[in-house]
Image: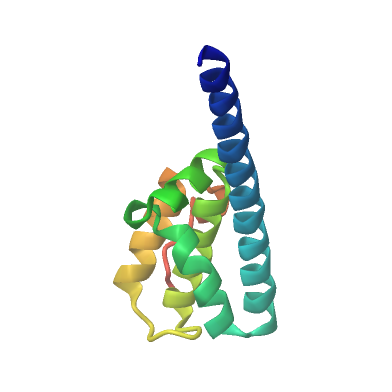
Length: 119
């Protein structure tokens, strides 16, 4: 019985490790896809990629991603701020832009440090 429990624990650890690794790779691919879409002017695609990565408070899976890859979330927040600031694929909203810039700054994104959303 003890052998079975030890084996079961090992299997659980392997499964959770696999999930964590595959989720992290997915987040990295999503942020890269979002940035590529942003640079191409495909803002709807960029928005779909950035939103789940930027707002980690609503989903435990996204929280795990941010713990494994701490640059993903602030980078997504930075790009969302740029989109709201410039009205790129969304209605221009300076207030939302400043909120996203602030979140990105607090997350350690250096690109957001001096951004104010002023044209």
